[in-house]
Length: 355
Length: 163
Image 1 (spheres, rainbow over the protein chains, first blue to last red):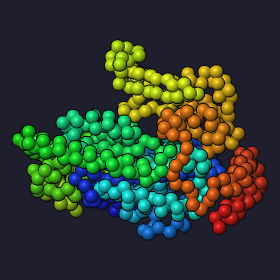
Image 2: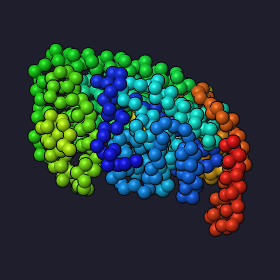
Image 3: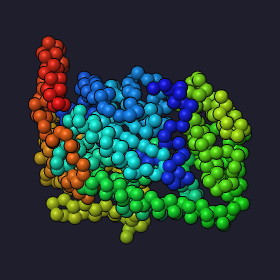
Image 4: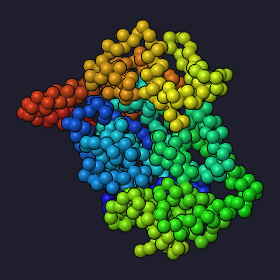
């Protein structure tokens, strides 16, 4: 896998296509699996981890997938490259920061990633742009079948797939849909929606998963329950509520336009203006402002820049991507200046790529 | 309803059942946060384990404290404080303590989903896992010839499993 090539593209989760993609950013399903004859990752010795890593790497290398998976041995990568994989949602922060043998097998389209020696021995995920729960499930189910032909999973008839944390036991499945909800957040209706979701056992998380802050008005909705319900039932519960949330967000956007068109227009124009002319820009502020520009495009208030460019800027202004694009490591202040410079160049050229 | 620790309205309600006894806790968000029961809208599993399980099992505590997995060596108390199990076998060894917990997290105690299609559960596991334990011991004691022999045996065994 070529990291320089990766840097310049958008990745799957920000491709900006697929059903309902004005509000649904991406859909992701992950399965947690463990090998039957080893202790879980947190309890495995260095020697055992090396065994688990080679055991899974060799067998995953043999599964028949098209396009083929590229294997990345994570301890061999620089911190920056690992961070970049986190920003592209191909590995978790935990896996990037962990010690010892570990790796990830990634498909060239970046829709598939199989993490080795995360909290569970194997965390497999399929991700697609837009609302695509069924497609994600069909693909991950098939990959799981292929892997299972080569390895013995820890499984019990009573508890299902056995996982290091009892919150994942059973199906080992976490399905999540990432939504862009600027209007619901701004009109302060989000808490109500989230409380309703929690009542039906769905969790709401920020952009980069557990414990992370919602940045750029992105929220992930996922199932909390993994035991006692089969996969189709869990998926149906999620896909049952997503249209309602999409509907609430659309209504909130419409009433915002109706009640305060001038104010909203000004907010979006200021966000765009700041991105085009600021000389220092944190990653947080960039996300917040790009979020309003994204909303502006969907409301027809901004016309000289495309969704594709905004999505690209979301990923390119993340710390690791930015440093890769600039070609040198930068500390906080330098990075904020470089980020502002990058944004100015891209936006003044009407979103055309500087190269 | 008022918070059990102060007079603010209770917004966090936790209910669970152990040995047919229902127990409810009602707290306001700040108190629940102060007790470390919730964190940024998410349930804090280790803290809940600590607070509730500890109180509920009462007399059984000593019995639980003595539980230790013969496979991976983790003690029940370690699992309780860290919230992570040590190996697949723990689900059997810690069953009594785990069931109420699974019920609280999932409102269920039994799997209802996909089942591995190729490898029937339990297939040849005991033997492989015993070989692995011997291999690990051989490496730790620096008996490398023995380790190499065990490793070959394991590979052969695994290759057979894959056919």
